[in-house]
Image (cartoon, helix red, strand yellow):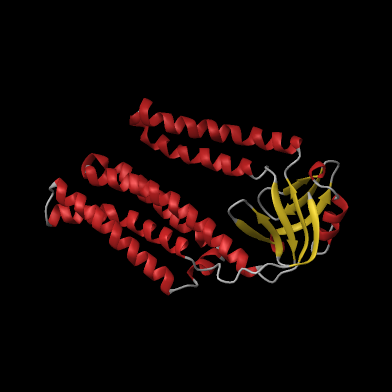
Amino acid sequence: MWRYAALHRRDHRGAIGGPLFALVIGLYVALLAIAPTVFAVARLVSGDAAVLYGTVIAMVAVATGVGWWTTERFGSLPRRLGATRTRWVPGLVSLGYAFTGLLSLDWAGVVGVLAMFSGMGAMALGSVLGVMARTRYTDTHLADSERHCVFTAGWPEAARNRLLALVLPLWAVGVAGFASVYVTPELWPLTFAQILFPVGIGIFMQTQPREYAVTAEGLEQRLPVARRLLPWERYTGYTRTTDALVVHRSWWFDDRFALDDLDDPDVVAAALARYLSAA
């Protein structure tokens, strides 16, 4: 589906801040603070279970409040974070945090368990933060931008099947890494292979139908709860094949729009031609 939108504009004033982003930041900080705080209290104050439980509750409340206040105080944080790839740093830091907890289970005991599970939770929240920041940056950057063409398309079936053949080995290795935790725990380095499973899912998901808008700044990709801006600088041109419009990237996989998904491929091609040359 497509619709011509030469004068289509949206107002996203106020989208950058918001209590939800501040809440997620606060919870993220709280999860990272739990393990070291419990470790310090157990060593310096008391190892009593009731004391440690109260410490966890208090730390979550305090760290969430501090993270919330800091985010609200510096309202430009979501936009600045979403403007660069540093938006993924919180998730990557938490991944290392979780693996550190896993490797410390033998000597750290309950603190290692807390570090592992709180790191996994922080990794999930860190990824959400990256998506939220990218969406807020896109909304602000394109608030007054002209949409030349809006359409929905996915990859053609042949290209989707080729990519599926590529990611199947990643899924297999990822599943093996997950199984190694229970089957061969002595081969603990293999557990790191688990990350390949979600990586494979992320690669394959780009073949699914998405809504796009052609703007002067780049391609806007619209997901149900998120948006992202793909600047024209990332692309080297476009090609029309027998089954798709292919927008070539300077690196990574090309974007493909199946002709069967487009009501009028000529309109989409003309919009792309405003900013890209035919390869």
